[in-house]
Image 1 (spheres, rainbow, N blue to C red):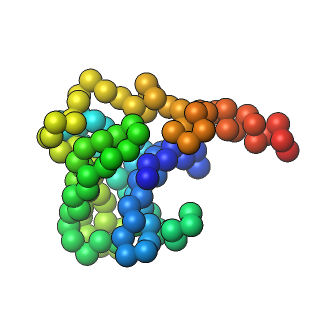
Image 2 (tube, rainbow, N blue to C red; image 1 turned 135 degrees about the horizontal axis):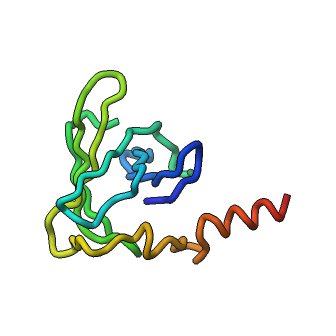
Image 3 (cartoon, rainbow, N blue to C red; image 1 turned 120 degrees about the horizontal axis):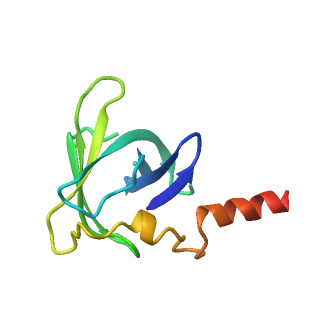
Length: 126
C-alpha cells in the first residue's frame, strides 16, 4: 500500500505486509517510476493489518497496484538505531522516467478524491 499522508510534513507511506504486520517507510517525495532516480525512504514504526524492521540490508518487492506496477528495491544505507533507506525503481518493463503519478494521478484509488478534498470535507463536517 502506498498512501499520501499530510502529517507534520507531507510524505507518502509505503507499507508491505510481512508475517501479519505492515512494515512501513515514509517517502518524502513519493516513489519514482524512473530507475535512475533514488528516493529517500525513512523507516517508520510497524502497523497492524487493520491500519512493515527487516534484518536484511535490502528488500525487493513487485507491486501490482492501480498507479504503480513493477519492481522496487528498499536499500538500507546505514545501520544504528535509525537506519536510513532508499527506494529505487528496478529497471524492468514497467519503469518509465516520464511518469510522475504524484502529480499526474493525485486522486485516491479508493474514493477518487485528492487529499485536499478529503481535508475540506473533514473540516466542513466539524
